[in-house]
Image (cartoon, rainbow, N blue to C red; front, side):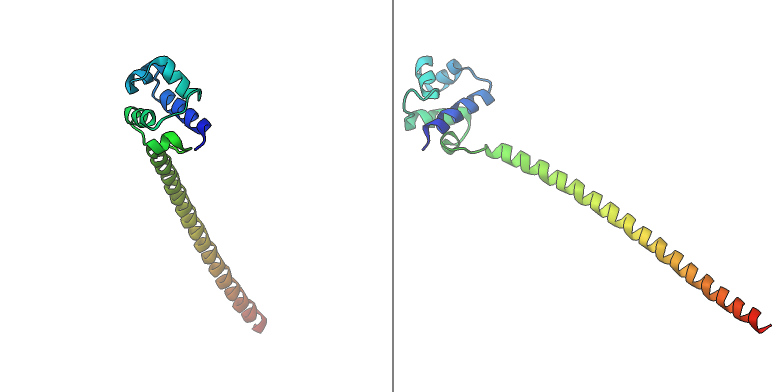
Length: 130
């Protein structure tokens, strides 16, 4: 375990909850000075302090120890990405439909031109016979 990650995670989690070091220390039963040393890496984080911190902050011990993003945040980011993907899928479907409609219009115009050319050819053939 990287002690720097642990201290950074403790600080990040505390700051995300807008708590002072004193408030965090009170929640886990440490003096402010002992908590400050823990968060600054001046003392080794012992399991009972990490477990108490995690419980007080409503996070997992793993989140305190490792570079992990809280699962709620990950779920929120995933939902946002899924929403954005759905919006993009809707836009793609809209433009695919528009493209199909335009292709149908072009096909109809091609059919009209082909019919007019056939009529023109018949008329020219009839004029040539007279």
